[in-house]
Image (cartoon, rainbow, N blue to C red):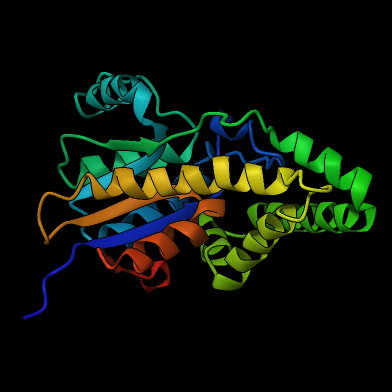
Length: 250
């Protein structure tokens, strides 16, 4: 008899607030208007149909006390205003409406091995300018398209587009091209990918797995869309989860 496995659903988002400042490409988004708030509520109603038992968000575990305090203030009506980011706007609201007493940080984001992403780009520019220009062009094109979506579409429509497999593959392709930043036996791009990017996403995967208390868990993971390709892959490849499709809910 097959063992029952918990469900996991990854909602890839664009960074709506200040927590996105560390990203290479920046997006401008004003979600405080009445219209945008209505659109956020539309997304919340869609995701609530998944009926998550736990909500995990892109917030570092080492700062869990901060998130816990914020969420407790929110559910006790002591938080003056929600911050204009996806953690508060989606995570807090969904968890509160479903009666959750906690929301769970699962992120890890620390430099390892002394390889900042900027060094990878610098090496590529010096050793393979054609590939460097290709990566920059693709990144700027993707960012422009995403900004146009934000400017012209509803939040639900934006999320549908950025969670589409074709878009996720484009972002993964850029990461894999960064692996080619090398000279002789100095594999700087691989060092960054292995010691930071893949490490970070594997730690997120591990942290989500630690939230599973029983086979009936239905965990919602709200994260920057750039993480979704790897997270879905890790959840699927582990054989420990039933990976749900976000398009079934949006």
